[in-house]
Image (cartoon, rainbow, N blue to C red):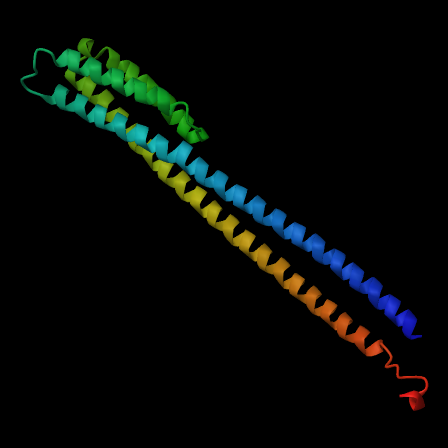
Length: 207
């Protein structure tokens, strides 16, 4: 019956080897999938949040400059031209900002900001109080948009960390199973050696 037991061991060993190969492929797929997801998260953080925050900061700086000019008690003769130039630069930054990825709350505030910039286009026709009200509204919206970038960036980093931990846990689990299979295969090898009969010479007298 040793031959039957040996065949059974060979079949079990073959199945274990097949499972080992499949697990290696699965582990490789999981690692690549989680790596791609983390890369996408980092790319989203840079393209849609850090770049957007840069546009917001530049627009904020421009709006502060406009407020200083409006508050100037003795405005220069070319103050109107200065404000127009600043507004032109702000609109260029805003157009670039509008091409980034928005959340629903961000989209609503960005649309409101566009309206405020339109109000400032006719600043020379409005009173000082009306212009300052528009400027303060723009600064408030820009501050809220900046807060959204911070919140979304933190969420992206939390998701990336969760993906990393999940990938590491999955890899460790698969690695543990691979170790178990290797131990089982080693047991098959030792059991097979014990089943091999020791054969001696049929005619010891001939030695």
